[in-house]
Image (cartoon, rainbow, N blue to C red; front, side):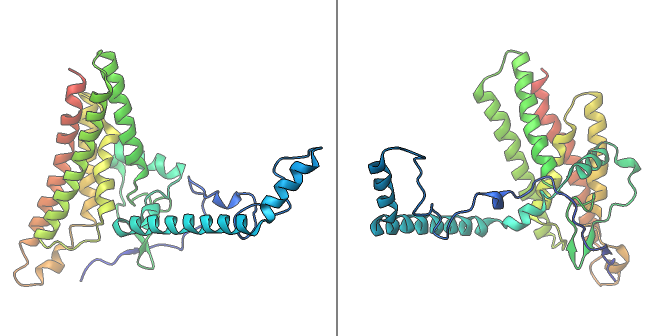
Length: 286
């Protein structure tokens, strides 16, 4: 039988790194505009101006026009959200950014010193993976995003020191790094599909694991250390998602080759990371 998923206690109410403050906006009436009796011009001795302003807000035609404009804006917002939801789940994307400072520090330590980390299994609560701030083994997109931005800034600084900086060259570095991530994720998805490997890896998971390579960008000694640490981290992380127990596969007839395919995908993904790091950084130190 397949290895049971690890269970964890219900999530606690820890503070997140990003808080929703949209509910703190000043109160308005149900139509979304100021009350009719409100004088937006402030106190004034000109009584005729105040009457004109009040007449504007009490005019039925003006109120109807404002309500119509508000409804059009809401419809446009709903259409945009619907189009975005066709390509990605906003709630699922929020899951990968549910981090706090404690998680970020622990994750960076695991990325740079993965050899001392023992428990690599992602924990679940009612068949739902815990958020990154509750499970340090859960993949996130906050660290890869910050690492990608840091890589672009360091590339611009290196080019500036060498007097080779230009907006076009910096844009080429950013687009090249982004294209490599897209190619890597597409190749992994295609490999998993062609080899009929069943796993709970989502596209966001693959983007997260692919983006961790930018955390250890360096050269020579730093490049060698970060490359070895990254390969070890990728193998141990993907092992819990791609590689099943060999005993469960050996029970089925004709499925003895599948564990080898899964192992090849895991190792190839890990070995490919330092190659991309070298390709993206070698021209910056020449």
